Length: 187
Ligand SMILES: [Zn+2]
Image (cartoon, rainbow, N blue to C red):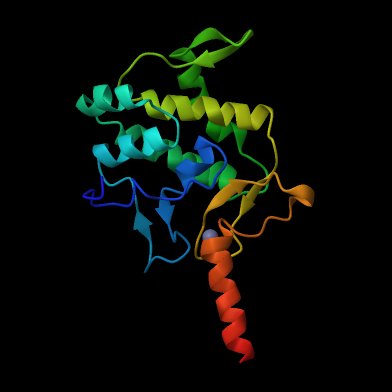
């Protein structure tokens, strides 16, 4: 896995749910000189999708014959523009993705509760499953969408912290860098 050209196999999953982890498959999107794309090819998309809990290991192999990247990239753009980067989600722009997932999904019982699932395996499977996660987030958000305090980072997460005071994508990454900078400025 370490031979993958992108960091898809090691990328931190800090979004708290797949639809926000999808936004975070670009690092440093606030700084074009450092911007890093992690969904560089189909294999990377599938590795990331398995790690994000969107496809199983068996499905990861079965989906290798399709190109799942275009649908993921187009959903990522929409979630970034109309959910992650705005105060109020733009439902009209997000609806086509949810609509498509529902039209290709089925209502399935899971632990006594019916829910939408995408069971057919094709090029849109990962994106449609994430669109269903997006629907879950929009209808029953466990917390507001938070944005990392480092503007260049651009990563987002569901802020389930008390008082919604989470400040960083990760306290070990951006939080630590800010601490080091503060310390350097003092001394
Ligand atoms: Zn960050």
